Each structure stands twice: as structure tokens, then as C-alpha cells.
Amino acid sequence: MLRVFTDFDGPIIDVSQRYYRVYQYCLEQTRLPEQQINILTYPEFWQLKRDRVSEVKIGEMSGLTSEQAQAFSQLRKKTVHTHPYFEYDTLVPGAVDALSKLVFTGVDIATMTMRRTSELDFALQKYDLGQFFPLNRRFCLSDDYVKTRDVDDKPLLMGRSLAQLAPAVDTWMVGDTEADIAAAKTHNIKVIAVESGIRDRAQLESFQPDFIVPNLLSAVELIFSYSTVSY
Ligand SMILES: [Mg+2]
Image (cartoon, rainbow, N blue to C red; front, side, top):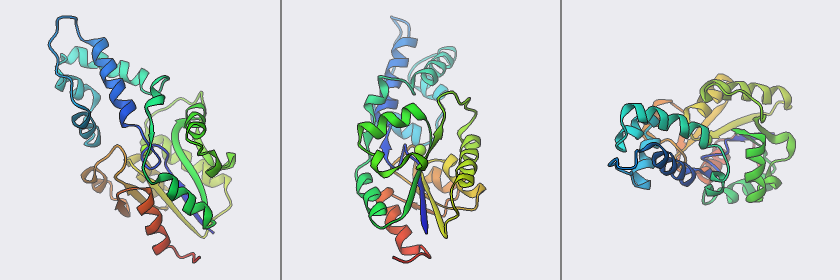
């Protein structure tokens, strides 16, 4: 059996508009009425995120004082995973085709995400993605999970999911951040990084995934060409 774990945000869902709306909101909330600020454009903002520039630094680059930038960063953290902002998420082009291809070919697919159950359910329902992931193939954080850091939490989540699943002959992980790469490497799973998410190629290279490809569809093609399981 061939098994593919895919991260959710990055390979399947594009969160960039949500993050940008939250950025604009937090900037507006933090600035003083008369204060001159420099609102970054969406491409400028997203490139900074892809380059792993901190929220505090992004606040400062937007014209906030360092004290304000701290408050901006705190507010952003509280706001980014809330409604109504989840409404701004969009599907990554080709992601549904990629998932269909995997399921059609009989690959065992599971999603592994730092979303909480209710946040994952919202997107699965909105984009009709539940069909690809039966309940026992959704690995996420419970609604009351106390998050630490994704690079620590995700390897733990991967460990819990591997303990629940029957062993596969060949297993792959697809993700868009250092947390996905760390999770896979911790458990000796081959990992493909995609450039459709929140890290650019240079950042991904520094974490040394096995492969870097543009998106989930190219990852699926690569898996079929390399897998030891034949179809
Ligand atoms: Mg991700």
C-alpha cells in the first residue's frame, strides 16, 4: 500500500488572503489615529511571510514603533485563526485534481494539519473536501489542544497518526513548511515540499526536504514516478 500524508494549508488551501486581511485589521487597530503608516501591498506582505520575516518586523516595516509592533503581533496571533477570517481562504489550483488522482488510484491518503478540528471541518465542508478524507484519515489538533510550536507539535501529531494506522509499504509526506519537513524526518518518511504555501523555495531548501515541487499536483506525479508500489 502506498500512503500519502498531505498537510492542509499550503498544499490544498491558500491562506494568503486571510493572512493579509488580518494584517490590515491588526495594523488599523494598532496605529494611532494621526500616525503615518505604510500599509504593505498583498504581494509585499506575502513575500515577507514566505521569507519567514517575523510579525514584529512586518509591523515595524509597516510604520509601527517597536512597542506597537509587539501589540500588533499579539493581536495578529489572537485573530488569524478566527472567523470571519477563515472565509478568505481559497483552494490551491489543481489541489482537488491531485486528491482525486490519488483516491482514484487507490492511494491511502490522510491529511495532517495544525488546524483544530472545527477549523478543519469548516474548510472540508466549504470546499467539499470531506469526500477525500474519511474521519480516520483526518489528523489535526483537538479544539482544546494547547499549541506550542508547529515544529514541535507536528512531529508529535505524526507520531500519533502512525501509531493509529496500519503500516504502509511506502509512505510520503507533502507540506509547505519546516514543521512538515521536521515531522516527516522525525519518523523517517520521505517529504516533498511544495511552493504553493507560506515558504519560498530558498526557505524550503534550507530545511532539506527530499524534493521541492511547485504544488500538490506535481507532488503526486513525482510520487507515482518514484514510488516502489506499482499501479
Ligand atoms: Mg501548511
